[in-house]
Length: 252
Image (cartoon, rainbow, N blue to C red; front, side, top):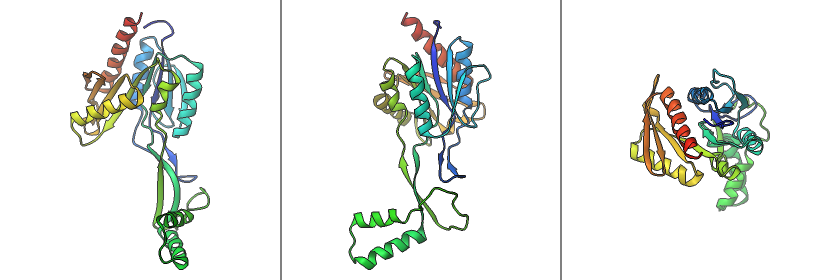
């Protein structure tokens, strides 16, 4: 690879707080991301590794940045993209799609609705919604274990991958797409959707049912369609290096 070939890799799974001790997270281990990082380090790239707390780390030395929430990922990537010109951005991190908006209980919600009905026999949808919102817990301190029938409302988090091309339009963006219980055609359509929305130059698409121990089947998809298939995490990592090396040679 060319001198000063800068690669940013995100890996692992983010988590979002429910209260001061509980969190919503996912099952991503970061193993694939760490292997991708090692493969690029071995190829001579300058790797900037953004990883979720507790996830796997590369065995080789590189710059590392620990994150936890979606917001922390956005802040770290903004700092990096403002200070480093990246050739490649590999967004392998499993980002939380939702974060906790409100916490309540069925008992509190019922009481709030009863209070509303005492004021008006025909409340509007807006009044009902506001009554339910008014029943939420006032703080995010530790939820008492004596509470029963807790109700969490979630709100969507920003799509981090959709922000990356705006920061550096010329970066080669590799996105990942994971689905379950689906066919290859649906997987390809999901990859095309990411290419359209985020501007990904390449999508590594996989299905949960195709990931078992050492086996990890992945489909490499760009705007032309399926261009490559890999069968293990190591093969995914080496394939990315080969594909990106070829593209770096073409740009010289």
